[in-house]
Image (cartoon, rainbow over all chains, first blue to last red; front, top):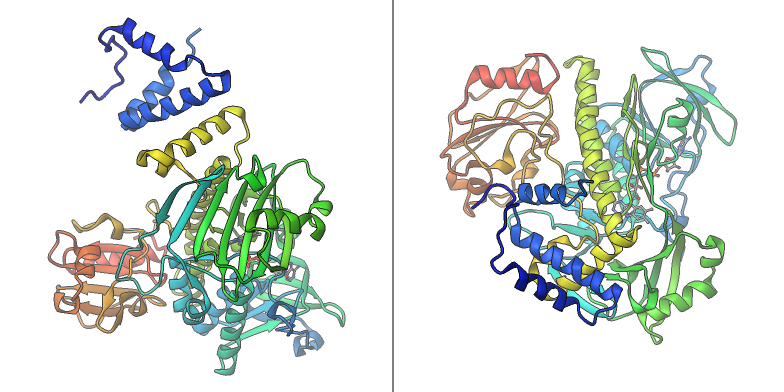
Length: 65
Length: 537
Ligand SMILES: Cc1cc2nc3c(=O)[nH]c(=O)nc-3n(C[C@H](O)[C@H](O)[C@H](O)COP(=O)(O)OP(=O)(O)OC[C@H]3O[C@@H](n4cnc5c(N)ncnc54)[C@H](O)[C@@H]3O)c2cc1C
C-alpha cells in the first residue's frame, strides 16, 4: 500500500480511460453530468479510504496557477 | 383537562427573605427553573448544599422543545433520582428511516450495545422532563434537603462582589435583595445574566426557518425516526417525524429563509402542509406550532468568578442531534461535585476552572456535530447541495455512502481527553475507559454498575488488592471491589479490563474515569486524587 497520493501515471491505456469517462457523460444534461461527477468522486474517495491520501488529493486538485 | 404546561407548578409566594432588613446570604442561587437549573439544584441539595432556584415564570417549558434524551443524560438523571419516571413514560426507539425525494433510501438500527440499564434514546416531551425534576425537588424538600423553588422571581440585577454575588430580584410584590456565595446561571439562550454581565455569545446563525409542530394523532406510524430530504410534500426542503408519548408526534418542516413567519404559523397554512405529509385521511390536532431559526454559539468562558453558566445560557446548538438539554445535564453533572468540594473547603477554587476546560471542550464537540448536520440538511451552496444529493442517491444502492448521510448525529457523551484532572493511563486496558471517559454501564449482580458509582470518588477494584479504607486530604474514597465472579455477562471484563487480568480505577463523582492502574499503587492514586480535585500534584 502506498502511503502517499500517487501523482505519477498509474492508468494503463490512459486514452481508453479518458474515452470511457467522456462516454459516461454522453447524453447527460449539465445538471446530470454534475451529479454524475459528484457520485463518481464519492465512490472513488471511498475506495481510497485513507484520510491522509484523501487530504493530499484535496490539496493536489487545487489550481496551481 | 388542564395540561401540565398550563398548570403553575411553583406559583409565587412571599418569602421571608423579601422582608429582611439586610439582604440574606444564601449558599447557591440558581437562576432559571428550566431543566438545567432544576438538575443543578437537585444535584447540590442531594449533597446537602443549599440551592435556591429563582424563576421569573411558574410553569414548565412552553412550546415544542426537547424530545430526544440520550443514554448518558438518563444515567445522570438516575443519579439525581429521576431516571425511572423518564424511562417509564418515554418512548424507546432504535429504528430510523431515511427518505430522499419519493424513495426510502435506507433504514438503520441504532443497535444499542447490551448490558446497559438505560436505552440508547427515549423520546419524551420536555414538559414531562421538567415536571419530573420539579417533583424530585419537592420530594427532596419534604425530606428536609435545602432546596427551594421561587416562582415569579425575576433576577433584574446582579453584581459579583468577589466574595459573594449581589442579586436584585423582582416579584409581583416588588423587588428584594439577596446575596449568594455562588450563582449558577441557567437562564436559557437569551440569558439576562449574560447580558447584565456584558458577556459575549458568539457563533453562527443558520439562515433557515423550521416549522416545528407537535400534533396529537391516532396514526399507524411506527416508533421510528423518519427523516426526509427533499420530499414531494416539502419540495427542496427537509422533514422529520418522530413519536412522543400520549400519541403526540413531533414534526419538523424546513421552510427556507425568506418566509413570512406569522403567515406560516396560521392553521390554514399549517394544516394543508401536514395533510400533504401525513395523508389526507389522518385525523390530527395541533398541540404546538412554532417557527425556529437555529444557531450554534457559545460563551467564551462558562465561569466568571462566582457566576457559573450552564445549559443554553452557556451554549446553544441546532437541535439536529439532540444535544441541547443533553449537554446541559452534562454541564451540571460536571460542575456540581466540583462546586461542593470548593464550598466544603476541600478543593482549591481553581478546580472550577476545569469546568471551563471540560465543558467548553464538550460544547465545541456538540457545536461541531450540530453544524455539520445542519450543513448537510440545509446545504447553502450549489455544490454542497450537489454533493449532498449524490450521497443520498448513492446511499440507496451502496452501503459505503450511508455513514456520510447526516440527518443529525445523536448525542453521545464526550471523553475529556485533554483534561488537566486526568492522570497518566497505567493500564493496558480498553480505550473506551481511558482517563477522561464516562464510565460505560455493565450488569452487576441483580443491578447495574453505574448505580454503584457517582456522587463521590470511588475506587473500582477488579480482581485486585486494595486497602479497605482510603482517605486523601480529607476526602473519603468509596470502595467497590469486584471479581470476575460478579461479571456473569463478561461486560465488565470487556469494558474495563480488555486484555488485562486486573485493574484499579479512580472514578470521579460524575462517573468519569480520573485514573487507572494495573494494581493499587498508593502514590499513583494519592497523586491522581489530588490532581482530580485541582491540586497541583
Ligand atoms: C425545537 C427544539 C427541539 C429541541 N430538541 C432537543 C432534543 O431533542 N434534545 C435535547 O437535549 N435538547 C433539545 N432542545 C434544546 C433544549 O430545549 C434546551 O437545550 C433546554 O431547554 C435548555 O435548558 P435550560 O434549562 O438551559 O434553559 P431553558 O429551558 O431556556 O430555561 C431557562 C429558564 O430561565 C428562566 N429565566 C430567564 N430569565 C430569567 C430571569 N431574569 N430571572 C429568573 N429566571 C429567568 C426562564 O423562565 C426559564 O425557565 C430543543 C430545542 C428546540 C427549540
